[in-house]
Structures are given as C-alpha cells and as structure tokens.
Amino acid sequence: MEFTLTEEQKMVQRTIRNFVKNELMPYEQQVLRNEREGRPGMTREEIKDLQMKAKELGFWGINTPEEYGGADLGPVMTALIQMELGRTFVPFSFGGSADNILYYCNEEQKEKYLLPVINGDRRSCFALTEPTAGSDAANIRMPAVKDGNHWVLNGEKIFITNGNEADFAMVFAVTDKEKGARGGVTCFLVDRDMGWRSEYIQTMGEWGPASLVFENVRVPEENILGELGGGFNLGMKWIGQGRWMIPARGVGASERLLQMGIEQSKSRVTFGKPISERQAIQWMIADSAVEIEATKWLVLRAAWLAEKGKDNRHMASMAKLYGTNMANRVVDRVLQIHGGMGYTKELPIERWYREMRLWRIFEGTDEIQRYIIARNLLKGHVKVGELMD
Image 1 (cartoon, rainbow, N blue to C red):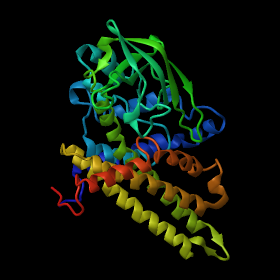
Image 2: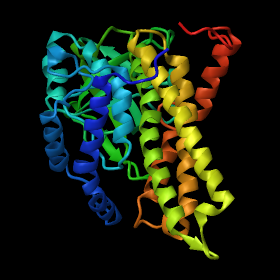
Image 3: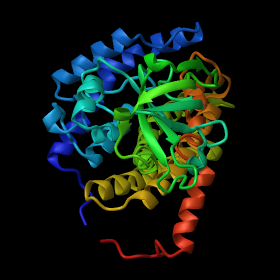
Image 4: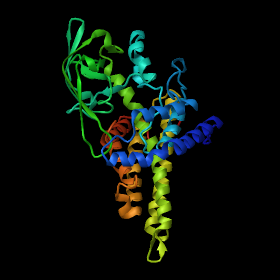
C-alpha cells in the first residue's frame, strides 16, 4: 500500500497552493468588503481574468476530456486541487469545465450546449430540487406533458445554484408518473428564452440560489438529454461527484482555519499566559487536526475508487457525512479561540461558519447520508471489515 503522492501530484499540489496564495488570497479583503456592502464578492470579469492566469499554468478544464481541450486530471488529482482551493473563500473555479452529465449530449446538443459551456460562452444550472423533493430526489413531481414534438413543463425548482445567472438549465421532470424515478424521469436542456424565469433566494450565507418557475414552457423533443426516462440516473451521477468534492474543499478550509486558530492561541494572552498553554485550547487544536486528517483519507479513498472505475457511492457518503460535520466543528472551535473578533465580519471566520453550515444540507443532507450508509450495511451491499481490493 502506497500513501505517497506521485511527483506529478506533488507538482500540481504545489502549483495550486502557490496560485491560491499569490493570486486568490490577495482578493480576500476585497471580497469581505464587497459582501459587507451588499455586492458580489468578485465580478465575472475578475474571475475570468484569474481563470486565464490559471490557464497559462495548464489548469483549464481539469476534468474535461483532452478531446475538448481539457487536462482530464482525474478524480484523485481533482480532490487534491479542491483541497488547495478550499484554503480560500474567494469564489473561484477553474474555467474550461462543464457539468459531467453534459457529456451525454448528442452531437447537435454538444455544439449548442456542451462546447459553449466549456469555452465560457454559456452558463448552465442543475435543476432537480423542488419545494417538496430535496434530499428525496425520487419524489420530484414537476410534470412534462407531450404535445406534438414538444414537451410542456409546469412547476417550480428551488435552491438552484447558478439559477440566477444561467442561460439554460438541465431540468428534471416526470414524463411517466407510473414509472416515477424508475424510468419515468427525463432531463431536458431548457434555454431561458424558452420562457422560464428565476427568482433570487436570500440565505444566511453569501450563496444566492434561485427558484426557477416554469409556466407552460415548451421544450422541443430534441432537447432531451440522454434518453427518455433516463433522467434520474443522470441526476444521481451529477450529485454523486459532489459528495466527495464538498468535503475535499472542507479539508483545505479547515486546515487554513486551524492554522489561524494556532496563531491566535499563541498571541492571545490571558492571566499572564498565552491561551495555547490552556488545556481546553490544546484539545480543540488536537481534535481538529485528527479530524481533518481522517477526512482527507476518506475523500482520497472515494476519489481513488472513482478513478479506478469502482463504485464509490458508499465511501462518498461517508466522506460527505464525516467531512462536512468535521468542517463545522473546526470552524466553531476556531471562532471560539478568536473570541469576539471571530464573530465579526472583519475576519473570514464567521463567513466560513455560515458557508459551511450549508455543506451539511445540499447534495444530500446528513440524514440522507446516514440512511444510505446504514441501508448499505443492513442489506449487505457493504460488509463491515470487508477486504479492500
């Protein structure tokens, strides 16, 4: 068993860490200031400029196949990159990528949707969640009714990331009520100019999702993504990747926060001693370090399974459940170590505190992950102490 990174992985890790330190972290105070004043942390132009700088370093479409101009670095490298990006809260992502399920586009759809997204000319959003179907994705009810060579969509999607900015949506709707999630859900590529509208949803964090409203929106049959009735499986492929990507980012954020906590504990003096000499603080630091390391290996195991083409769903659920709760515990401890200053908007700690609370909800709540893990064990899909292969 080999736990060391390859030379290539080490090089990528160092390069991304330097990029985060030199290019992204200098924006942090601007982001905090803009958000305090009710503006987006960064403009699209600023993010695009940074994406071009990353492209010069070879980081463009990190998971995009080489035939589309991407680097196709694979799940393990992607996990390492996400850990490094997590060290800052600057809202950055590499350019040249598209949602993984857009690669199921046919040739005509690739020209209209996939390639423009990869090139940064179009923006997409993933529209599955409904007011009555969040973690219980199989319970979506939004109907799509056939009318000639069109499908007519009516209903609402909610908490849709990028829903306010996207010019087309991957919309999941029920095309066969009797079959439901077992062959009765279809994914449609729906342009905004086909008639749907978005409404901003205010949250406790800086993340601004949208509700998407569909009123007799007519979608041509050729805009079905994949196969008729194959939408639910596509949706699960999209969600599954996020379940280990989110805790990967949590590792980087938690490492940065823990370092802030260590530095604060050494400089903050109470009753004649630095608080780093207080056992209560030492235990916070020790517990955080152990939990971060545990999450790191859960994430890398899930990514490794994906890279080998193995079923990583059980491990991905374990990584998301443990990793997102870990991040919430670490940020809470670090805020406590900083006292009143940690609660202010002058430092990024309270911002991370609000952002991380979301991680335990979207793309499968804690409760859903526990359900999946327990179900797999109780039904024998996974066995306790099973030998690794």
